[in-house]
Length: 379
Ligand code: ADP
Ligand code: MG
Image 1 (cartoon, rainbow, N blue to C red):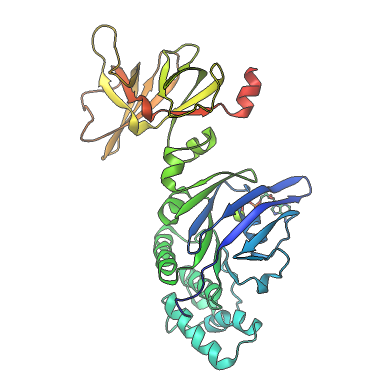
Image 2: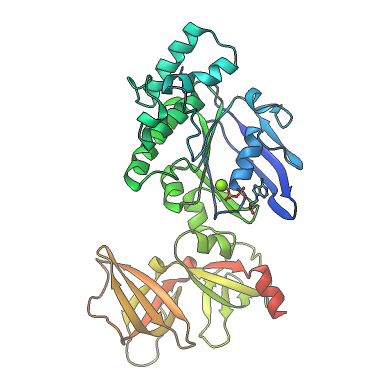
């Protein structure tokens, strides 16, 4: 294997696939830069595997196209696509040794014996399994078997590598070790990787960008930071990390908007640029727990500092997490707000039953359209 392979520039254009009444994938599109590591992240049944099968050529889409570089590959059989695939359940041939397993894709492609042996040696070295080529799968641990599967997917120098929950069957320690191996190989080979997982942390650790799947569709594609800081929907905001979600009606005035909830003081938000949500429309404001400060309530009426929002409430619970404290605070309307305060800033004297002020910079409040189902329910 050389490290000068041409990395793939993979593009999926509006693919859709139905199984009877189930829409497994519905109008999915994304474009990967050569050498990029993109993760498809979503709950079980959201269409991730179906997407990979269509890219690999194991399933034909009902509509849409797959492109690799300047070439449409939707009609090509799987073995002519120059795409390597690793599945969760290693799928090694049990009656072949590790080396024979790795050599298999080379045989299929008609590569001669001497060249095969050379490439297999190199692939074994890439996944750090030198010396185990003669063993059968049953003589290898789960982690080693998965590295053989990885070597087999890399040995024919594909432009793109697809991985479908490759750590799913491994315990936590092995998973972390294999994660690092995959990240090293990605760096060293510069190969384009489309990776599937339902594990948010794994996605955050490994990916350049993440595509959030929901019910056969992609809700948003972006870097971890973009998805966390600039979610485009309540679904993505709630999917990535923890959040407080406030519902109400938008009262927008210039650069400042107010979310008017039925029984709570208004929540102010900064509106940067043109507001995508009409004045008077149902809206949602998301505030991340770590953006909220928790202060003991002062006497008299509380006035927020300029540019900040303030809510008052009563502490229900304080959870000590070492690096920070998590406060669960009951708001006057009966809902609960969560705040996370770093150890350096937390007041250890605040406990259950204390009256507190919750404040945050209004620029930290994320203004979003109310989810469609909710808008229908209230209209
Ligand atoms: P994921 O990998 O995200 O868990 P899948 O792509 O495997 O999701 O499945 C998406 C949806 O399509 C699910 O509802 C699943 O039950 C359905 N599905 C997948 N493959 C088939 C199939 N061969 N026949 C019928 N339904 C399928
Ligand atoms: Mg799957």
